[in-house]
Image (cartoon, rainbow over the protein chains, first blue to last red):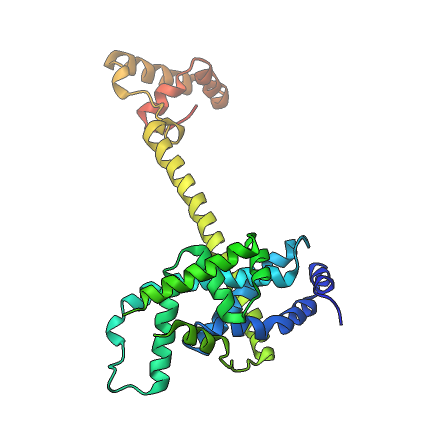
Length: 173
Length: 127
């Protein structure tokens, strides 16, 4: 099996097939990442599509200074942050759509709680938001989180701890 | 809401599969239409800039340098008094009627620079 770097080199030399192979390789993880905090599969698909369109342009100038997997993951985290910030405002405008506690079934309640949790995550400081997103979506090890964010492993752990504490505080009521 | 429980729930959530062939097809379709849209926007913006620059230059030139487009070098009729006018007509009549070669006479008019006067009187430009 060809490595990511070999595929990227082929793509830089004009092979669309190599790019498609890369998409195939990372599609399910990227889609899965976005699916965790979006309401629908269509929305997750749109976000994944935007990411790969960005990759199509960016990979032509890729300089192999970091692993493609890390590069893509970093892009996913940034995109998720943008999405969360955007939907936070959107959700604030639709607060009246919250289900009535006495009439809801459990799937609706779960979906609503998930939404509330992600809204609360969207209001966290940037680093905490990134760390908790990575932990939530792919259970990313702290070492990898530290590598992606360019901080120490302990700093990543502290950010996660702060994030969970803040979330508890925000969602107390 | 129990945060830890919710976090675990999200982490262990099962994600539905995605059709990769359809996704890649849509991806390239979207990418090409995005590129086309951007190209159209750039072309539109460039055309608008060229038109705007051209319009500003034109308006400026018409407002501040109108002589660049409209030349009014006809001498006003009033420059010639009645006596001169009569003299010129008589002279011209005499020269033309007494001449054997009309072209030579006209050439003579050119030399004495009556052309401008004649032209201005008939509202014509002939320099």
